[in-house]
Image (cartoon, rainbow, N blue to C red):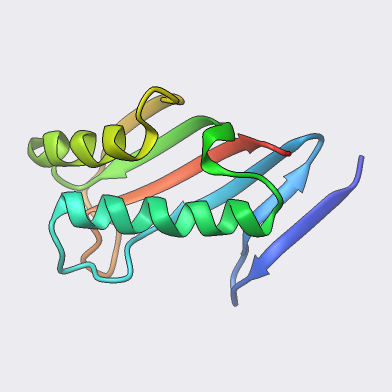
Amino acid sequence: MSIIRNIRTPIMHRAVEANGFVFVGGTIADDTSASMGEQTRNILGKIAGYLKEAGTDASRIVSASIFVTDLSKKKEMDAAWTEFFADNLPARATVGVADLGGGALIEVVVTALKG
């Protein structure tokens, strides 16, 4: 099994390909002062770019883990989520957390099929 690491940052690779899957690490919005819906849209756009660079696309996402600091804003996140995925909704877990750092309201981790 080969492992391909894409998009290096100082502390991790944004996407890692292994055994037919692409694993995208925790992604937060560029503008953490934006609303939950805006942060979600920004994150999903970034993830789509990471997946494209790895040779796949967002329609191949099979699983997502979402961490949010305010579950009362989950409806905003859900609206942006369903806009993005339409009928290709992946399996998903949403977890409330105390803090994500840097003012982020949401962080998303996904796993996609390669290809």
